[in-house]
Image (tube, rainbow, N blue to C red):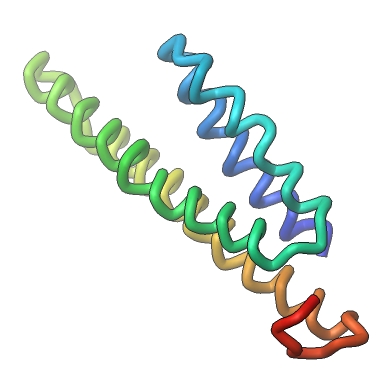
Length: 119
């Protein structure tokens, strides 16, 4: 289970590094702190983290990809490698979201309450 948490941690830190690069510290600090939600045994916090990562795939990585490709095209520079790298980052983040589902499944199996909605 530790590697599932590591995927989520790295995905959040990639977002944090992205915001630090553009000097947006107000967005970087929450992404550096939000993986602490994995320490709590709360389904709701983990789902919130998954939603945050899912939204960031489109609002952060998607927008950054489009802007960077447009900049490369305007400069008549190669852009295909950039698109593959950004696609890999987006797929990695989506993989981290899927790993979160595995964390929930393992927690349900270890929980004395099973699939009870009250935890």
